[in-house]
Image (cartoon, rainbow, N blue to C red; front, side, top):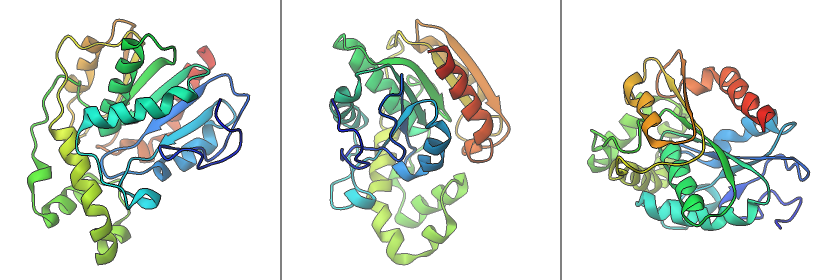
Length: 252
């Protein structure tokens, strides 16, 4: 069983507010270019209800010396292996954008191996897994890659304005975009757990239909939640998204 107190007791997850006796764990998967710190405040608000893990992908912050993974299946394999020791209680997986696809593939691996763990998947800001991405941001030069990140929002502008910091984040950013833009699931790929798709009504990357098409990838029930905003609607609609999460935690 995982150690009770260490915040960084795994390279792959951060426990900002450990809750060792919680009846359920929430696992948060950040977007392309994102890090576990994106969910630090979310963890604080969820900590009375659940033990919260935030995924930390290679190639950023304290993992800056590691090679960024540019294959989403490989990312899912590695996350799955790291998450299995934490599956000593029900898991609720929440992923935003690229994180939603990783959460989906991690859930599929639990179910493939008949390992108990995920009981619900929340996919935020993401088109259905079998719908190809109609973009090739990962092939853009560095400035184009950074411009796309700025256009979508969700990244501190001070970070993008600092030349040294930009150089530090570019390898992981390109790796993340390569991973998500080259990923596509088969139409028949499904999970057994209920899926909640959450999206902004003005997301330039995900239409309402594409968010609703997640229904075809679960046999366990589906709901669609629409919020005002763009791709990073969840930054200003955090309270509403947390309400959705908390309602599912109360059910469990």
